[in-house]
Length: 114
Image (cartoon, rainbow, N blue to C red; front, side, top):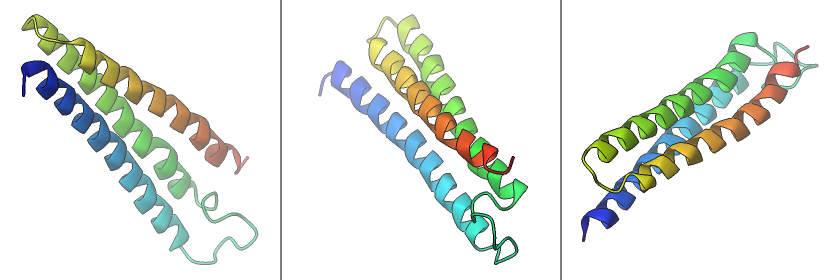
């Protein structure tokens, strides 16, 4: 395996790991919100508690943001070594796009309580 393929594999695994971690945290947050009981029978379960809403909106978003910034830091490091940096640059932008999509969906969770 040449260096370009190794860099591509590393960037793909990094992106997949960050998205998977954010998804796992989202599922755990939703499960915690659902396990809170029937304290808000007239509301939707996910929009019932402000803590659950905050966890669902902010924790996965923060993980995606840190992951995207980390990919750009890695881009700079690879660029300084005069290696193939474009792959890591693409990984950073993919994570930012996933972050933007997630923030759009999470905004509905936050505005349901208003």
